[in-house]
Length: 595
Image (tube, rainbow, N blue to C red; front, side, top):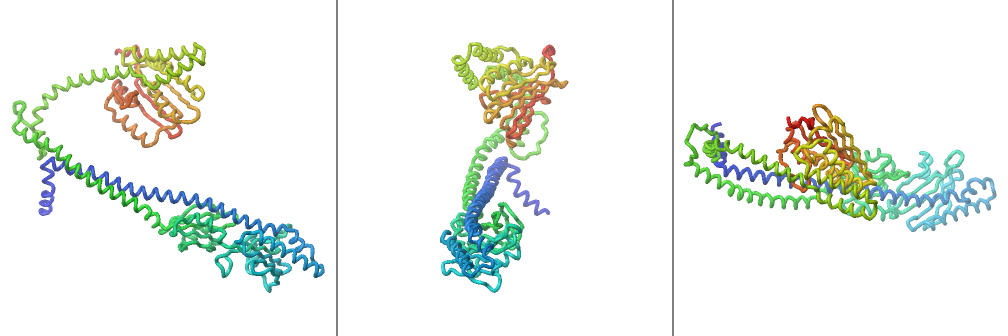
């Protein structure tokens, strides 16, 4: 244990006894840690962003590709319908029962002619057409090699499956030739839906290749078509879904989506009404490799930034600590007043020495507190008086332009109303004495402001105000309501399309007054709302804001200065719904303001 303490003391003594070393270590940690964290987060966010982009893009591509495939299958199905609705097939099935051989031969020839017509009307991807009549046990076949009629010993397998499972259509890969598939549709009696036979088109899968290649921009991706039972009918690429993934996909009856497995992303789209499942497989390594370059660049930049930050931290810490070290050394012989009993410091570095020496100067600092406090009060009073003289220049410019246009387009009385409202606003801001005004005066000032805004936005602005008469005599810091309403226009309503609504209510809730300004603007995001609330909770009484306008923090700060920390401004906002600003002040009637 003693050996460990010696090692600990050996490692920590250089920092315990020197503020310079402490500062260097602190600045290195403060500068390096954020860079490492930001670099790692940026790399992970880059990978997630790429993953999201890949997922969204492929879901969209799967949707549209499914639509195109469905249209191509519908076109093939229409070829079959030309056979099913042909008069030749109807005559053969129902009108030549018991007729002579010549009539039957003519009917069969008509069937062959119909199939031949369909065969040649299809594109070069249709390689064969078959028609099987169950009752007559006749199989008509037309393809590029032959045209024939046969009487098979038993029902051909695809039609047997069609009849046995009572399906209306069937899609399967041609046995012995995976480059082709058969689209088979049953021939049903209209009255009772009995299966009378079937029509089959033999088609090259290449018909769908041009559409499917849209889903396969890389050789690493695999695209395949599976049947309703999950059997793979046509694969493009080498990847095959795992049994677990296929079992999940087989449970899906419709829709578009994706599944994430350990090694792959599987995107699927069930093509209705055929029940075919279009599947695309992207290995997880593809996304990781795509993001790897971005992550490598991020780590390189992060490493360089860390190195530069360390050098800058050491340099700044050295430059910052050197004056403190020199001051500590020079103050060893410095005594501002007669030595008195000094409490011992627990620190052993230069700061400890400064604590001891500066203790002797504390009584002089106390003498300056009152003077400095008075100066601050005078400064804040001067700032407030200058603040009261401000009117947003943009608002003034817009108002003057409004008056100019009204002089040519409206009667003089309307123009005079706007000019008088602007004049009353200037008179209230500049000439009204005192830092506090009655709520009635503040509401009248707000009415003048809204008269101008109502004239500017008459077609889309609805404004309402409700004032409790008992609360109208209460006192409030000047220029409290109009800046908040102006903020509602600038930050909430100006970016909102459609109608604007702005409501102001003043209610007496003894012993307080509650004022609520509510708009239906774009609202405030959660991050910005948290930042504003934190700023409002940590007000230091400052009057000025960073901008040219009287801001929300300024209003809240003046309320705290006049009435104490128990009062102030509260915010509520719902994005895309609106923002509410609540002001709570004590009810101080104007006649009692001198008390």
